[in-house]
Image 1 (spheres, rainbow, N blue to C red):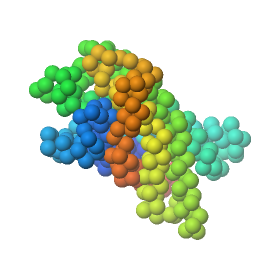
Image 2: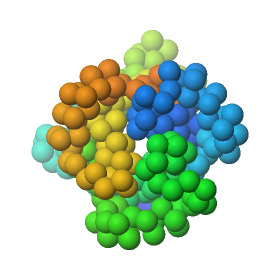
Image 3: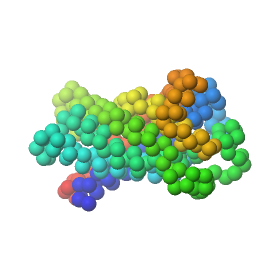
Image 4: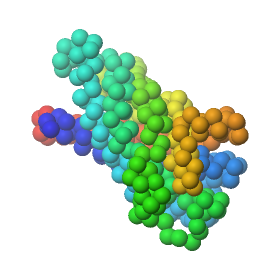
Amino acid sequence: MTAQAIIDFSAGAIGGTACVLSGQPFDTTKVKMQTFPNMYRGFINCFTSTFRQTGLRGFYRGLTPALIANVTENSVLFLSYGRCQEVVRFVCNVEKGSELSDIQKAASGSLASIFSATAICPTELIKCRLQAMHEMEASGKVASGQRSTVWTVVKTVMRTNGPLGFFQGLSSTLVREPPGYFCFFGAYELCRSTFAHYMGTDKDGIGILPLMFSGGFAGACLWVLVYPIDCVKSRIQVHSLAGRQLGFRQTFMGIIRTEGISTLYSGLTPTLIRTFPANGALFLAYEFSRKFMMERWGA
């Protein structure tokens, strides 16, 4: 692995850590509302109910797999992003090392997301089940009173579904990632370009707040586009524990027929609230750590 690849990988891991630590409570609320929409009247009700039932600690259930998932996703994503830029340069006949357009960078991010999707599926499944464990106990899908840890979820998946059980929801993840990350990287670069234009500087000189806003805006664009797909993914990963192992299409159509289209957007409010601090922190940590490492090691 080259020095540049190591820097991209490390900066992505640092960014993923910052993203989780700043946005986990809202992500937990999102998963609860996606998987058990009839239990809560809305974001505030879900947030306050979670606090009353399990305290502050309840918002950080699934933190370990969330950290593993995000560090894995973003390290692989940004490592692949750098390599996929070279592929886009080759396809578009752009000279090696030259700056890509915002659209070309969006295409690079979309291609890179295919690699990260496979890497994050097992840890996302564990994270979602831990986050929704209280609701699963309340609905009778799992026995109540048992201590829920990463290890107990892993053993349950292995016992009921085998090793392939960790990849339930993979098809939904692969449907979600490429269009989502095209918008994610495209919106991020376009927003930075707009700030740079009006401030009379380059993208690297726009400052911390515009950089964080660009990251938050990128996250909002991603989630508005792919949220229904993510909702289906969460349903598959959580409810398959009860023996229902439907695929993406069957789960998607089942939700529409029995619960309505609006159910696919359950939890969107906490997701959009989360996206600005979480993705702002992601790109801030990524850009600054990457710049530091490149200056330090001269990559």
